[in-house]
Image 1 (tube, rainbow, N blue to C red):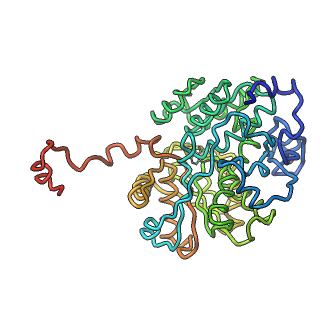
Image 2: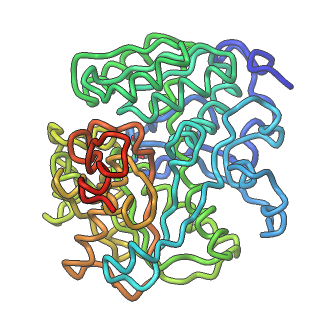
Image 3: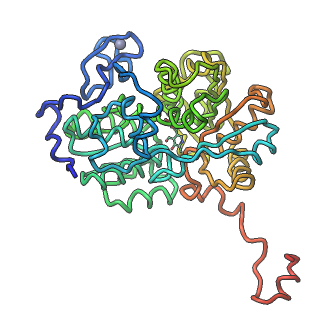
Length: 426
Ligand SMILES: Cc1ncc(COP(=O)(O)O)c(C=O)c1O
Ligand SMILES: [Zn+2]
């Protein structure tokens, strides 16, 4: 197997391999449309707007995709990765299950509902998808260190992917993160740093370090255009798993908003390439009320998002100044969806409802999404008769604090049948 070090040294100190980014052609500014060559850039030189990857797609068939690997690389033609991407070590995320959720649907009065259960990824969240693409870009650009600011799940994914690739990771998180997320990152023995501040403070510090440390790829900062493309694979998989068609409604949790925006981009690519029929779909955003700047902007009819200081049990979604906020507003408004938010009590109830009805234990972000789905139905924003998919983006085992003290044994008994019946358990 090829090693990470074979691909380059420091950024700028080696030339990018021909085909290093597959069918990707340029980086394009999302604000002014300026295009620049592929490289370690993330802000437009003209207007400082965010850059995204543009492609020149080949003709590609459903059969070609179906014959590919059982992970996100089956869609490699639609990602900024080289054709030999699968020969480098990575965590091989993707192709998580799409679960038909009839019991949750019945609970909520919905006709047809699926849960895209991304807790099944290697480090148990959708972040493995984005990190696999970011790691590839980092390698092709000659970076030596994989780094990130994180609300928790990204920390797991970066530390694990770097361990597998045999490179150093530097992961920075808010100091008050759940113990489970700290341990499940620290176990990979990269450099984990707890920062006294909110995620937004950590993010600012990361941007500062990224400007100083030349060989460091901050996956969601200086290689963000590549990183974000990984979330398109959620849309590709949902369509493929539904038999190559689009659902009518999708509910997606929002932190930075990148996942939601890229699910929309992925859908539009499938339509453009003729891989699915061009049927209408609506995308809905889900936030916790304690960190709901995008929901607030949506409801107020604003185009810009006013930053907030997060205070919610849903720490993975606690980004007060979401980079993709305005683009989330665009996507939800264009597709006819909305953005809604739910209280922490509703989040916990959402976790319990998903577990009780479907046997799926989601993390707090999953609780936000289920509770938001319920609220969207209750308030008439979502059509209960239309086919709906929700994203469970992470695993409940990583946010045990959220339910600690709220669930537990029905009784503690001596090991006798008498004790069992006396406790009223028979
Ligand atoms: C479990 C989970 N779901 C959803 C999100 C939201 O992702 P994004 O920042 O792309 O909106 C995150 C972000 O950290 C997350 O950890
Ligand atoms: Zn621009």
